[in-house]
Each structure stands twice: as C-alpha cells, then as structure tokens.
Image (cartoon, rainbow, N blue to C red; front, side, top):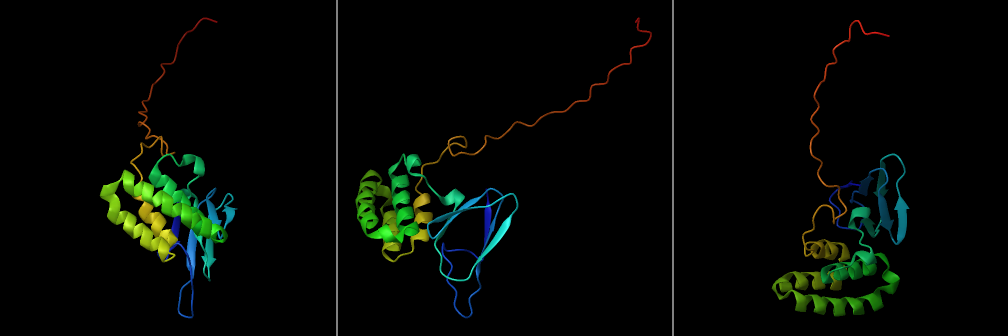
Length: 169
C-alpha cells in the first residue's frame, strides 16, 4: 500500500491561477481519507487530481485509536482528528493541549519537537504537525509495525531422477 504524491504534498492541495493540481497515485487496495470521507481503491492503480484545497491522509498515515499505545501516538491521533474533522476541532484542540503537556513531561528531551508541533497546530498546518509527530514514535519491529518479516531466500536445487529400467510389473 504505497502511494506517490506529485508535486511534494504538504497534506492539502490549494490551487490558484498559476498552481499545479496535486496528484496522488494510489495503489490497488489502498485507502485514503479526503475531507473526512474514506475512499478505497479497487483492483487497479488510480490517479487522483485535487484542484482545490483538500485535507487528506493516505492509508499508511492513518492511525486507529486502538493502536494508540504510547503518548506520542495519542498526540498524533488527536492531531489527526483535528485535521480530518474540523467541525470538532474546538474540543479536540483542548484535548491536544492536555496530551501535549503529558508528552512534554514524559519526554523532556524532545521539547523542541513539541514546540514545533504546537506551533504547526496553532498555525493550522496539521499535516506537517502529523509528520513531525510521527518522528517521535518508538522504533518498532517489522512484525509489530504490521509489515511482513523478511523471508529467507529459497534455495532451489535440481534433483534428477534416474529412469528405472526393467522394472517388474
């Protein structure tokens, strides 16, 4: 489930007279949230063009609430809610402040990153705030991250069968 964004996306597309539309290329089976609506791709790759402002998250960027097992993921999740559901932003911004302070207490060494995230959220640049927040996630093993473990190579050897001659019936 990989996708390509051309030109480099900042999480939303906004065009003017001279602007180029935002193009997303989605792989088969990939999901996308656009302005709160969940879209799925069928059996073939799809190219989408956004000609106006749109808030979106690709499937690999979406964090489900049940996967929020660290304070950094809780912070990411609340920013995600603010970004995708602006109608509930007022309440979620209050929750963001509480979770941000909790995160600062748990990781004082990351204060500069938390300052950046707070400034980005305050300015409404939620996509970039999500990107910075994801950098704080603890390293996960490939199996716990939902990826397939690396397979060991298969060694193929040819086995020749000798023809059996004069076999009794």
